[in-house]
Image (cartoon, rainbow, N blue to C red; front, side, top):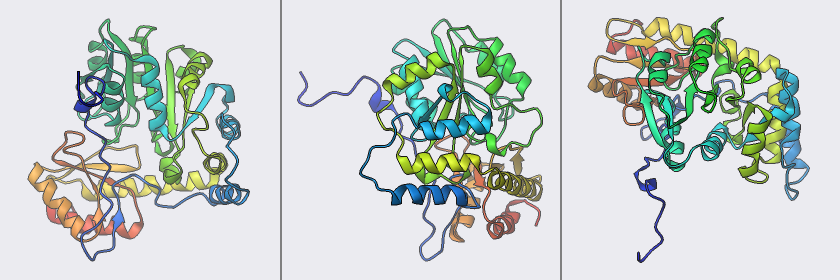
Length: 364
C-alpha cells in the first residue's frame, strides 16, 4: 500500500507540452514569432461580437452545445451543424477523441515530425504511439500504412503539418484512408487549412462525407482568436454523439462562441490574412534559401529553416533572440535540433529576420 495517491501507469512518463518562448532578452522589446499567431490581429467583427457578449453579462451559463457557432460554421462551409462539435481549442477535441477511441493495448500512428500533442493524448489514454518515418519532412503514406497492426485504432495526420509546413495532396490523403481498416479512425488535423494555397489540397470534408471512420479537426487560434481557445470538429453523427457524451459541460464560453461565429463569417478578413501570409511566406522562403540554409516548402503560416547543424541553429536563435525576435526551437520538442520554426509576422520583423540570418548563409 502506498502512502500517497498513485497515478495511472505511464502518466509520469509523459513529457508535458512545452510552448515556444514569449520573452525576449532583458531590455529588448519582444516580437513573438514562435506561436503561429495572426500578424493582422483579430477580425473586427469577431472582436465586436466578443465585447458585445461580455457587455451582456457573464453570470449566465453559455448554451451548452455551441449552437450559435455550429450554425455559423455550417453556413460558411456548407456543413450540417449537427455534424459539428466545438471545443476549448482543437487540442481539447483531440484529447476527447483519444479518450473516446483509445485504450490500453491499442496503438495510434503519427508521422515522425507530427504535432507534439499526439504523443501526450495517446499516452494519457493508456495506448501506445507508433511513429512512422517521413520522407523529406513530409508524411509518408506507405510508411504509415506499413505501421498498421491489429492493435491500431487511430491515425493522426496534421495536414499541413506543424512544425514542417508540408502537406499531403488530396490524392495521397485518399490513398492513406483507403489503406486503413474501417475500425481505424483517421483524424485529419487541419489546423492550418486556412493558409493553404496549393491547388491539390483538401481539408478533409469530402472524406468525412464519404466514410464512417474519418474526422476533421480545425482551429480559430491561427486566424486571430488564440486567446479565446476555440476549436471544432466535423464528423459523422455517431462520432459526434459519442464525443459529446464525454465532453465537459459548457466547454466553450459564450464570448468565445460569438467571436468565433463572426470570425468564421468574416470572409474579407480571412482572405486578407491568407494573402498576407502567402506573400511573406514566399518572400521569406526565397530570401533565406541558400547553400547554408534550407527552408522546407510550407503551406502553413510559418516556415521551418534547417541549418547545417544544431550549433548553427542555436547560434541563429540567439542572434534573433538578442534583437527581440523570438522564434521556435524545435530540437527538444520535435527532434529537429538543426531547425528553427519562424511564424509569419509583421513586415518589419520579417525583414529584420532576413537581415540577421543572412550572416548564417542566407541572401540579404
